[in-house]
Amino acid sequence: MTISPSTLCALFAVAGILAPSAAQAMCGCMVAPRPPRKQNIATPEITNESSKVALVRIDDTTVITMANDVKTKASDFAMIVPVPSKIRRKQVSVVNGKLFARLAQISAPKLIERYDPEPCATRVRRRRPSAMADNMSTRASGARPRTKARDFGVKVEAVYEVGEYQIAILAANEGDGLMQWLNRFHYDVPAKAVPVLQSYIKQGNRFFVARVNLGKLSKKKRRGFTQLRPLQVHFDTPKFGLPIRLGMVNAKGPQELTVYAVSDRGRVQTSNYRTQRIPETRRELPLYIKSDFSKFYGAVFENATEKQGMQTIFTEAVVPQLRRREAKRLGVNKALKGRAAKNLVMTRLHFRYDNAHFPEDLALQATGDRRAFRPSYVVSHAAKNTSCSAGRRYLKKLEARKRRRAKQLAALTGWPIRQIQRAMSIGVR
Image (tube, rainbow, N blue to C red; front, side):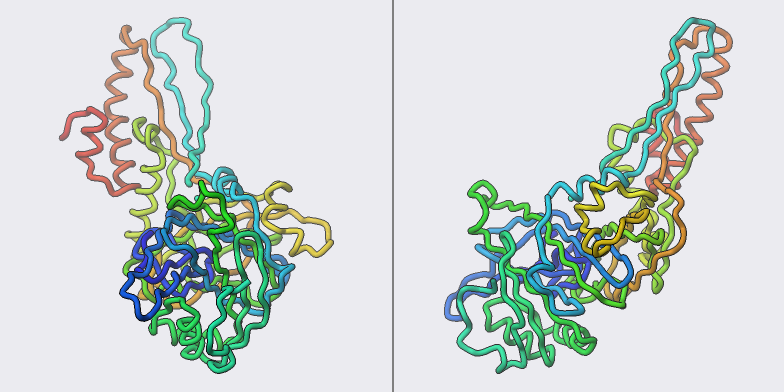
C-alpha cells in the first residue's frame, strides 16, 4: 500500500496519523522524516506490502502484536499509535517474524477435494479424500529539536530502544500542539490529524512513537525492502477495542485489516458494527479454483464486502483451542500474570473500511461461543473410466453438475457466469 508522500499508516490496528492509498493498513501510522525546510527535496515514499495485528484480551489486560512489511528509500521513519496509558520499556518487545504466517496457516480457509466413484466395474483403487488449506494469507531521535516539547504542551514520558525500534512515549495537552511539535521534530503530520489526535487526548491517551532505525538492520535488509520484526506491547485498560480512525486521516481510499483476536472466554466480535461469517458453501465448485485458491478466496471477500455495502466485519475463522506455542508467542503469559493458561479461542476478523462506513473505533467483546469455524469449499474430481453404459449416464449427470457448480461459483465471487463456463469448457446456454 502506498501512502501519501509524507506518511504510511502502519502496524497497530490502533490508529495511524497518516494513511495508505489502498490495500492493507493498520491503525498505527508510519510517518516519514521531513526534509530540511530550505531544501527542495521530496519526502521519501513509503510502501506497505502487508499489515497484520494480533490482539490478546484477558480480564483487563491487552497484548497487541503488530507487523508491517515496509519498502522505502527513507533512512528512517516512525509509527505513531495512541495507547491508554504510559508504556514502560518492559512492556515492549520484538517477536519472531514467522508468527503471523503461522496464525494465517492455522486459520486458513479449507479446500476439500473429493473423487467421484468410478461408474464402470473395474478394480480401481479409490483415492481417499484429502483436504488442503491455502495459506491466506503477511530512543527518540538522536537529534534534539531546538524547541522544547513543553513549549507545545507535550511531555516526553519515556525514551528507550527495543531492537531496531527507538521508542518514545508522549503525553499532550492538545492535538494542534502535538502536531506542531512532531512536525518540528522533522516528521510530516497533516493538519487533518488534529481533531483525531484531540479526541484521543480527551480520552486520556498517550502516544506510542516507534522510530525505525534502518541502520541497525543488515545490509541485505536495507536494500529497498525491509521486513521489520513485529512489535509487541501490553498494557492494562478496561476498554476492549481497536482504534482505527487516526489511520484514515489521509487515506485516498478504503483500507483492509485482518485481526487475530485471542480471548479465554470465546469468539470475539464487534459490538458497534455488524459481524458475520464469511460466506461459504459445502456444495461443489469448479475444480479449476484449486489452481489459484487465493484468488478465488479473495474474490469471495470482495463480493461479500460489496454486497454488505462495506459495513460488515467478517469472521474468517474461529480456532477453539490455541496451541501453547502460538499462545506464548502472542504474549498470553503477559496477560495471565502467572496464572495457569485456560482454553484460548482465536478469532480471525477481516474487513475493508473507510471514514464514511466506519466512523468509530472498533468496540470488541468476547462471546461465550467456542465452536470451531473455518470456511470450507468443495471441489470434485471426475471419474476416469466412463466406457460402459453406466459411465455414459454418469457423463450426462456430470454436465448438469458442472452447470450447478458454475452458478455456485458466480454467486460466491460475483464473477460473470459466462467467464466461468468458458474456464470450465462447457457450452454457454
